[in-house]
Length: 188
Length: 186
Image (cartoon, chains in turn cyan, purple):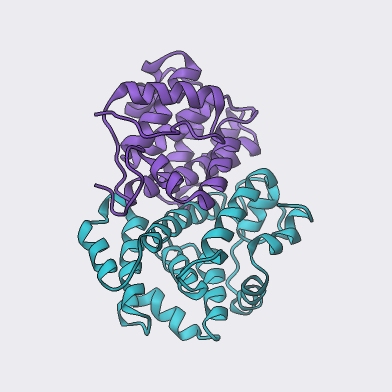
């Protein structure tokens, strides 16, 4: 049962966003830029960072839906997503992404834990400043989204098929477009 | 030294926001709606929630700039220090204390918020919208604080700089940058 009167038809963050469309707009705009906007990190890589942070925060709705979106971008490879959640160091992803995930994991705990050595390691593996910036901000933003979803006790089903179906849709249409389903057209 | 090549002379979050305008826009809008636009919680109360969360995250820039903004709205800097040190004994309403309890839990982990915490805020007069906004302010500052610290931004210690920022933010809000050019501060 959500802590406040959210519409039970809308799951996870959608319930919270439908309750307060004014804040939903910038929240959707931010995730749209970070995860779908132009970037030298692929959409799959960025979704993996979001999934990893959400998984460390144990927020089921976020790590399930972003895991499903990541898989949709990565040719349906759900095993890879699961491996990143359990131990990314053993996952079949680039050394650069591993170095960025190490930074994301520190930001998830506390931004002050990120060291120059972490950043140097990412750079040595080819990460650019803007990729490091976006990694820090994706990790920070998911510390917000996760707390928003959990702090209102939104409905977070345990249903892989549901997340898979929605994940495909968001991977195809993007966040702002899909948000029209629960905010109404003209949401942006 | 910032971890990446941020523009020099821009303190705290203003460096990240100047570096990447595409993400700055929604971040500014979010802060503006949550902290500055009309609300049944006063701007001073909302800034106190932001300051409290930033203080628990030990983010010097955010707790100082929002603390100065809160002080400006409230006309009293000592309340800000009391809220940071021990809000239960601070001269603020029981409703705000109940909301600060919720904010403190969200700062750690949203799952720690209980129905009893929410019932207590309601018993002191908090509405669903106020509870929603408290949760989202606390969540948003869990982002802003990590962004500022995670990039290793320059966080000056000069209280005058924050007093100036607080005055600007209290009057103008967050859509327009409060720092438009490089500043010199200790």
